[in-house]
Every structure is written in structure tokens, then in C-alpha cells.
Length: 370
Image 1 (cartoon, rainbow, N blue to C red):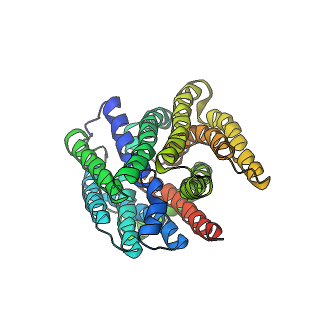
Image 2: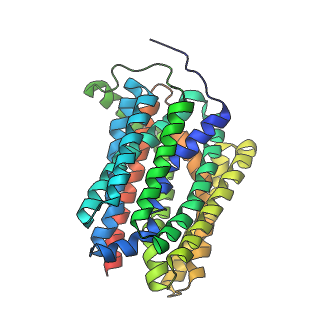
Image 3: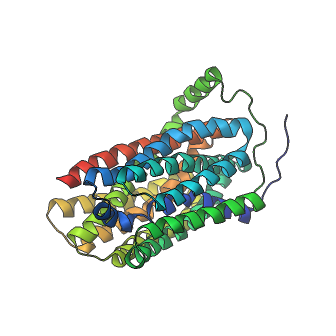
């Protein structure tokens, strides 16, 4: 049956996107200042410690392949409410972890449930808006995500330094609870027509092939994975470099990570201006300049043996600025051509991104070990 969904206001949609997509930096950035402490207290190897991040991302990637069709079949709200509830319980379980293996298992559950939250958030944009308007709303939501990303490492650094790493997961659980309450009370169902065949193997495989064959999907999903892959190198390795090599405290590291989030936030604001003037493709082309400056300058300084905070921080500010534009456009562009298959398209785009980040995390764990 076809039913016109109750359309949320632009403000409610943007706040929902900020909270739902913001679960990613909450799950990663708030936790990053605690990584060296977790490694020491749980007597873990570097590879196992990095696996708490990499396993989360792999579960996040594969989880999206499941939740995308489920959301197309049963609707957006049931998936959001169920995944947020399990995510909340997993976050509380992390507080009780006594071994690195137990923590890895909890992170896998977090990643799998976070997948449902994020894939539905992206699909909802396509449910409600055409691609160009969707990019503007997505940019608003990512501005909110940027604010969450700014506060997450600051909070994580303070909690780690004063209360220990387990307090970080208590904070994650509180944020998850607030998001669950908001969704339950404020966010209506947005899907226009449920697809009763969305989970059938034959139609599902046909949908995957249709999406994967589309050149616009490959271009936008590739952009999203590439820029997030570059960001993930920084996210997964920066706590050890800043704190163990350069001697920053958890609070100082939180400030360093916060500055990157501020640059990302500025990028989302600039993105909205560029979208009006230059469209999605023109905006991405302009954002490529700071992205290249950031990536190439960081690589050049590292190759030259420059080991200072500024040699990492300044290039990262450039890269994060470009990332603020790339993600708003790429996440919307990958789903834009598929109004009837938004869940599948969002899932596949997220899967590609997460798999790229997983292999980067595996490589990084081995590289840092050496």
C-alpha cells in the first residue's frame, strides 16, 4: 500500500540527521583518547587494540547490507528503534568488559547496530527530498554532526583523564538514550511505500546489481570511501602518535582532535554556499583542493621526518575542511538516482566505505606495531 508519510519539518529532519549520523563520531571520537589507556589496562597488543576500531567498522559495513533491505521492507522507524535499543545495551556492556576480546565483541555489536541507524538516516533524506535539496539538508545535518564531533574528543579526553576509560562508554550510552527518545517522540515514518520483496534473494540481488552498475553511484560512493579512508588513517592512529610519540595528555589530544572537527564544521557551512552557486559536482571539485593540500603535505612532512604537533595538525585541518563538503555531496549523490531503492543504495555506499576503512585499520595496526 502507498501512504504519504507525515513530512517532518526541515529543522526536525536536520536534528534527526545530526543525532543519527552523529552516532559515528560518538562511537569513535569519544573513544579515541582512551585507546592507549585501554591497551595498557587490558594488557592488549597494538593489533588487538586497533581491532576494537577495525572490527566495529567491518560490522558496520556488513550490517548496512542487512539493514538497508530490512528498512525498505518494514519501514524506517522500526529499524531505528530496534537498533538504537540494542546499541544502548551494547554500550552499557562495554563498561563491564574485562578483556580486550570482550571489548572487541561489544564493539562488533555496536558497529552492527550503528549500521542500521546510519543507513536509515541516509535513506530518509531520499524519502523526503530530491537530490539537490537533499544535499542541503544533509549538509545541515552534517553541521550538527560536526558539533558532536567537536565535543566528543573533548569529553572523551576529560573522562579518560579524570574517571577512566569506562566512563567514556557510559557517556556513549547516555547519548544513545537521548537519541532513542528523540526518534521515538519526534521522528515520523518517512518511507512512502514499503517493498515486500526487498529481502527476497532474487530481487535483492537484482537491486544490488542495478545500483552497482550505475556510474553515478560508483563515483559518489567512491568519493565517500576515499575521503573517509583518509580521515580514518588519522582517527585510528592519531591517539598513539599524539600521546605516545609527541607526549600530549588525553585532554590535549582531545583539543587537537576538536580542532579538526571545527574545520570539518566550517567545511559543511561553506558547502551549503557552494551548492547554491556551483551545484554538487562544482562543490566537490573546489573541495578537492584543500583535500589534496592536506593529504600531500602531511605525507611530505612525514617523509621528511618532521615530528611535531603542527606537522600533523595543520594538514589535517585542510583535509577535514574538504571532507565536510565531500561527505554531504557524496552521501546524497550515491542514493539520489534510486528513490525506490534508497535503503539498498545507502547500504551499499556505507558498505564500501566501511570495508575500505577496515582494511586501512588492519594495515595501520601492523604499521604502528613496527
